[in-house]
Structures are given as C-alpha cells and as structure tokens.
Length: 382
Image (cartoon, rainbow, N blue to C red; front, side):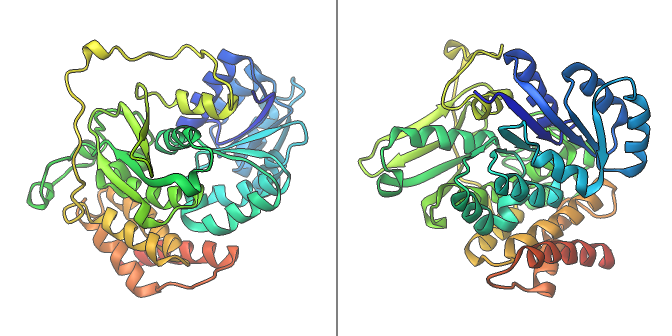
C-alpha cells in the first residue's frame, strides 16, 4: 500500500474520492493540488495536514495562504507549485487527476522524479502516450490506471504470465451513455441537461458529455493501446449498459477474464493505491440475485461519430490524438454553454482535424501546441 500520496486535482470528482479512500485506509497525504476552489482546499488541508498545498490560480493561492496561516502547510501556486507537488520528496505515489492538458507535464515530472503514478488524466496518454510510457520504462516507474475500464483490464491481465504473448484481444466496455439506442434524427434537439443525465456514473460535466457522445470511450481506446502495448486491432468496444463488467481480457486459449464490481470509482482508486494488495475501504458489493440481465451490444459509430473520429486518431498516431482532444474540449465547452448543438460536436472536431492536419514523431511541445491550436481554431469558427 502507498504510504504517502500526492494528489494532483484534489477538489475534482476523482480527487475527492481519492481522499475518501485515504481517509478509510489511513493513507497519509503529502501534497494536494487544485485550481481555485479555496474553500474545499482549505477543508482538505485542515483534515489531512499535507506539507504542501497548491492553488494553480494565483489569486486563490493568496487567499489560501491567509486561510492556512495558522497551519504548517506550505502554500504555492502556478506551474512551480504543481511541479513541486508532482515531485514531492515524501510522496511515494502521485495521483494524476488534473483535468485536461494541464495534467501531462506534471505526470511526466512525477515519472522523472521516480514516483509511481495512479493515472486518472486521459490527456496524458491520448496526447502523449508514446513519450509517457517510454519515460516510465526508462525511470522504472509503474503507471497504474484509475479509470474503471483500464483498472479492470490491468487486473484481468494478471491472469497471464506473459500477456504480450498470450493476449488475443481486450474488450473495453461502455455504458452507452444516456442516448444509447437513439439515432441521429432523435438527437437533433438534445439539451445539456439531457446529455448530463448519465444512467450509472457520477462524473464531472466534461466527462459526462464525452460519455454521451461516446468520445470518452474513444479516448479510453487510445489510452488502452499505450497502457497495455497492444495494437488497435486487439481492442474491441462493447456496450454494456449495466456497468457491472468493467472490461475483459481474452487470451489465446479462449479463456476470458473479466473484472466485475459496482459502479464505484473508489474501487479502482483503492486498488491503484494498495496494489498488489486489496483492502476494504467500505464500498458496496454486488448482489447477483438482484441482477436480472447483463446485456451487450455493438456501439453505433455512425450515430456517435466522436467514437469514429477517436478510432481514426488511434490508428493515425502522431499529433492526431492531441488535435482530437483539443478540438473536443472546445466543442464540448461550446455545447455546455449552448453555443452549438450536441450533434455538431463531432462536426467541429472533424473540421479541426482537416484544418490542422497531423504531425508525426512529435515532441511534447508539438503535442501541447497541437491541442492548443485545435481548441483555438474551434472557438474561432463558432
């Protein structure tokens, strides 16, 4: 079990649930990072007494420094503060849960500081998967996924002595979101409220919209490629409405191993923090007698074109993932603010890809710039 944890993104959905697990298991928190939620950061700092508290927003950091002046917590801000938390000497693991591109550099910083990483930031692998996994290998660092699907695959692959030789395919399950089974004509006038009404999971607004458009599953497809070193052809997406089977691994002898559990993000978080052991953090358990059905279906990539675009980016490589990610971030933001329609999200993403193209063998700067350019372009044409 991890002894000292640094949490990047402590006030978000993953961050607060990570602190739930730390509270339940008695894990010490060395550093916490958020953007500008001063009230919650102060509450977390007073409860967990981290040595370092970081508010990325400078104004928030000034408020926080005053609020915590009667404690021993050091308060920092900006990139310097985030990097200090990512490389905190007392931490033996970093929870990477910052939202968006802001998570890539701190994750690489943690890896280069020889810290094991519990990874909950999608952009890190979607945009910079090759360099991140290469750096992890060079630094002898373990990256343990926190997404429920990738955690399920990670656990399932433990059934193999040499899964790179024995794996046939990975089955990545998807809930299907709130619009499963609907066709394009039925989605013409989808409201933000309807898109945010996820049937199984409680997540932030951006991730919930990505789930509704199936972009989330496309991003997870790209992540799985890098995390487990498999080809796009070895990954299959299956819609599983009940979110009980979180994902599966099929081996060359026909055996299939699945990880099942209730839809509770604290389960994969707990496993990432306690690997290779397991501890009771107070979660819920499955009552199989109460399950009437476990259903499976193919995703409709013609209706949900965001997934189709993500599958293209997975195969294309280079900066394709970064452009896809940046364009999607902007399009989702515009939808959340009622500037574009739900079905226009993939249309704008495609326009961004066509405009910006793809650069092969990119540097980290190329990746960051490609995502930024894609965001800027989408905003400029709306």
